[in-house]
Image 1 (cartoon, rainbow over the protein chains, first blue to last red):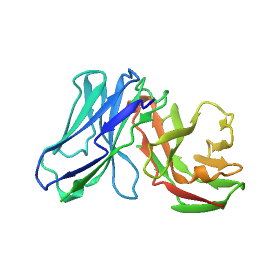
Image 2 (cartoon, chains in turn brown, blue; image 1 turned 60 degrees about the vertical axis):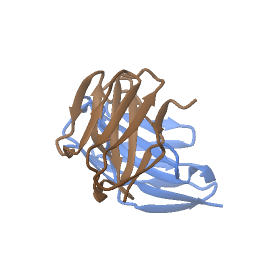
Image 3 (cartoon, chains in turn cyan, orange; image 1 turned 90 degrees about the vertical axis):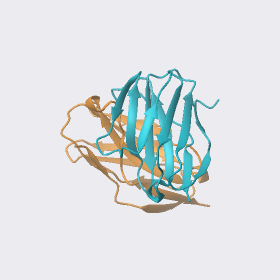
Image 4 (cartoon, rainbow over the protein chains, first blue to last red; image 1 turned 45 degrees about the vertical axis):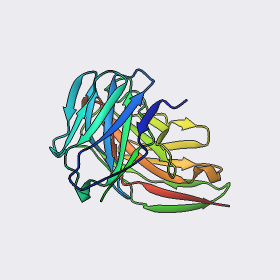
Length: 114
Length: 115
């Protein structure tokens, strides 16, 4: 029944070593989002895709990139993880980009940087 | 820019009692949406309830209801007959038509339901 699936649930990476987090969805939603949630903080949007159109938040560091090869999959690439990038990364989807439809979240990937 | 503020970092309630979580927001938009999301420990975030700003009637979903005060920019969540499974972090969030569905979250309120 899982509709938004994130892999892995837990990821440990070394300082400076590139890492990729993945997200897949079975909802056929047009919009996919990546949020970063640091400990005891609110989730913060990094970027989102509306179909193939990529939208980067102004304050998302250049160290973060994303790919969406098809409707179902979206990847978050962190080129050179720093200690400050340790966080829970949440993937979400919605059918439309106008805020009028519910966002569905995955269980998140907790990233640890050592 | 939209902002969302939750001033209660933690709350607790006895099982079967009622609790109200507070949220205020600020926006210059006329067409916006407000949400309460629940994030249980180690589980995914799920939508509890949503409110369209143009609707005057307060949204209700079973034991969950909101008190939407548009002029005061207040959007509180009332949980009636609290259950142990309601223990979670609750986030108030907003978005509008022009933001591509981007959710602006408050800082969250950690709710503990005690037996």
